[in-house]
Image 1 (cartoon, one colour):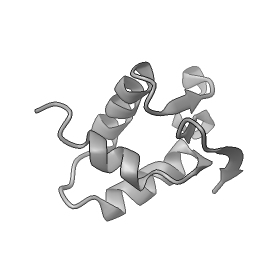
Image 2 (tube, rainbow, N blue to C red):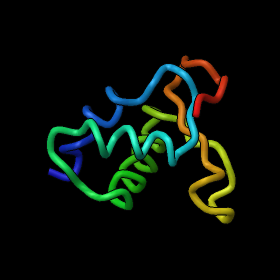
Image 3 (tube, rainbow, N blue to C red):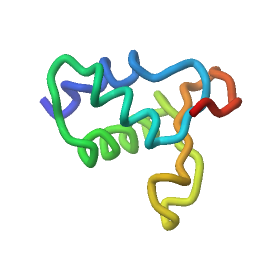
Length: 79
């Protein structure tokens, strides 16, 4: 199913806010079943619409400007 990776994506995100590129590096290296970065970003966007993660930043500036955090987590950005 399309949401196959969602639980693992959310579980691998840290409690602190992090740049999207950093989050992707962690996700891609630790996921048990591998997938691509573009798919993960799309799923993160879907999870943000569902309120399961928060994505802040300007998408027009590219992925490097986006910050990912879990609701209730720290807004302090870790690299």
